[in-house]
Length: 373
Image (cartoon, rainbow, N blue to C red; front, side, top):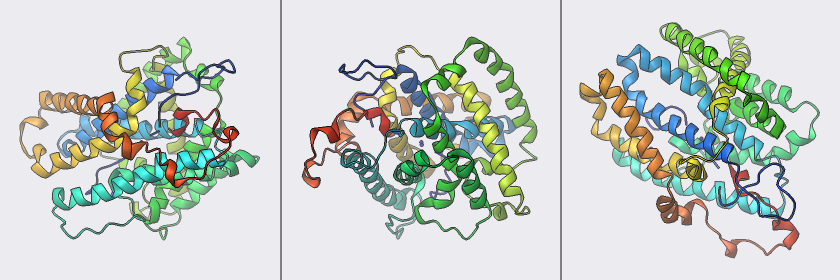
């Protein structure tokens, strides 16, 4: 679940109970603290990245950190979303969860963002269109498409190489329009497919102490490289939003960058996941509300842009940049809490029993809530 806050064309999963690998049959399904922790920490990085956007032009260090975060925070989210989509089989129960947990929030927030940004962006005639995702809603549109295609990826012999080929071809296709943000959906597809291919033991591998120690110099080297690359590379490649032509480079750069960015992102995702605690923490329960934090913090960001908080001098000082970072983390944390989720559950996780035919018990048994993520 983000990407860049470009004027507003620019963070995710459902929760109640989740399945933990190896849970004994017949017992209530337990949420896995590791994944809830990972989702919470990733959504905090999403919010911090959005807070840093107005500060990039005045600080090379902020731009370097921004680039690092964008290299792995959405890939991490998408990989986890793919991992919990492995059981999607287009059964009635799964389709219902897809509609209530992805489609309904998409329609509601696409409409809400349109009305809100008419004010915040000063565009009173901005049209409501469900085909052109606005701001953060691109992730819901992409998740809808990825989930629907899950049975295909679970059936083909080489899903990840095929998904990488699709992403590479997308970078050669500037004619792909804005409908459902298809360019970004296709370029991020390999991360979702990778998640579908992963097993619990793969996550155990990156959590070994050797990997955690190795992650320190690797991440430090990435920060140094990012700082060096700020004036030499366009970090917008990590948004996966445009074809190669947009960057003014030869077409062959597109497939090459697809593979290079995929490798870079996977290394940083592994570093990030190696540091995620596996035990319950004070923020573990907030991992169940990351979709809330993701979608709701966008209104705070847009309101802040409207009042031009970054136009003042102090936020651009080192102390101001730290304060902005902490405020962003605190705001998105508050938006993931239980009281906020209770208020907005009617549009985030509606039951909508009236809209669906009743299914047999076998159709609804064992559906993990975290699989929406």
